[in-house]
Image 1 (cartoon, rainbow, N blue to C red):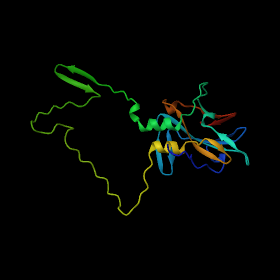
Image 2: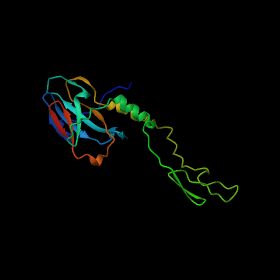
Image 3: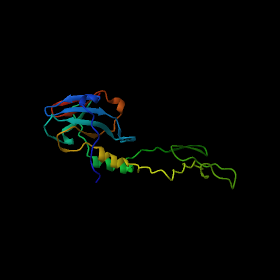
Image 4: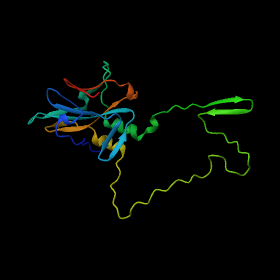
Length: 206
């Protein structure tokens, strides 16, 4: 399992788009829709709402950070969304085939002529020996060869970054931040209000 180190917290909660104060910590949060990132690497988790959250304990005090203490409320509904584990989110990114995309194929005929909607095109090739449409070789542009003298850092994988940047749990006595992932397959445009709940605090994200 990859190390879970979270993100780099900002200096104070007020530097985040939304902030509030709970009885044991101040909170900063930012709604990132479906994106999560580190440095120049940005990825999309299309089945999740992503919130970066930062906790700032009082000076000299220690708090216990638990992702399960957070909930997300959409459009003021009573049903609250709990955050999903980083491992579950990572698994869904590693196996995109788990998501099924419906396809439609219909065959309508008028006389001896047929029309296919959503299916592969039929080959009506009248010239024997010629290449049917769509079956010939495709010449793709070649990527430029990397500079042999340049050492590039290995690209991070989305599943790894999900775990590494998730909100670290456990005791902390200084600012701590990371991403939370809430399962959601609805339309973003339908979200009129969005609130992050933590203990007695409500952080208004939208």
